[in-house]
Structures are given as structure tokens and as C-alpha cells.
Length: 170
Image (cartoon, rainbow, N blue to C red):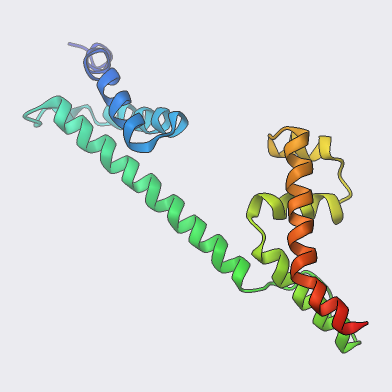
């Protein structure tokens, strides 16, 4: 049997079961398709992997499960890294000579870091880059109304967080 025929047979015999397993596990059709592709790409590159397996389906399910776990771990690690970077309070503004202005800039940087990433992205694009909601929606792959609502919710949270400092500085 040629490598192509072998791979086609394995795919025909097991892809549907692997897809169902992965979809149940990941709850994401996109992730499921990516992982399933990775399983078969790995098998195409190393067809000998299945020759020593006692049970093809069990071997493929274990491989798919391991790839799904790896994907989830990478995603969690990436999210933790993003949270750490947001918590570091990277200064978005140049230092100010006026201590009140400096305090306000630091508070604004902190408040922006506390916003959910989706809201922070829309607020940034709208306030700093001057984009329209239509342009933001297109860039982020969301409806314009969603961009507008994320902006509104983000501003509300910023106002709530910064109001005491603003009132104090008056």
C-alpha cells in the first residue's frame, strides 16, 4: 500500500471519531480542525508511527489529546503573559513635569491595564488612533455595534476608576 493510500485509509477510518472527540474536548470547531490537521500532518511525515501501535484509533486519540492539551497550555501561558504585561503598568505616556499630571497619567495607564483586552483594544484605536467604529470593527473582525459598545463600556470603567483622582486634583 502506498503512503498516500495508507494515509487516506487511516483518515477515512478514524477522522470522524477524532473530530467528534476533539470537538467535545476543545469546544471549538476551529481548534478541532487545527488539531486534526496536525495529527494527520504528523502521521504523513512519520507514517511509521502507526506500525507499532496495537490499536490505531487509541494511538490517534492519544496523539490528538496530547496536541489539544499542548494547545491549551500554550494558550494559558500566552494569556498569563498578557496579564503580566498589563499588570506591569507599562507607561503609555511621556513623563510629566507636573506631579499631578504624572499621577493622573500613571492612574490612567493602570486603569487601561485593568480593562478587558477587547475593550482596551477598541478604546486605544478610538482615542489614540482616531479610528471610526467601522474601521475598528473591520480590523478586529467584530460588528460595528460591538465595537461601539466595547468603547462605551471601556470609557465607563475608566471614568469610574479615574473620577476620584480627577475630583481630588480639581
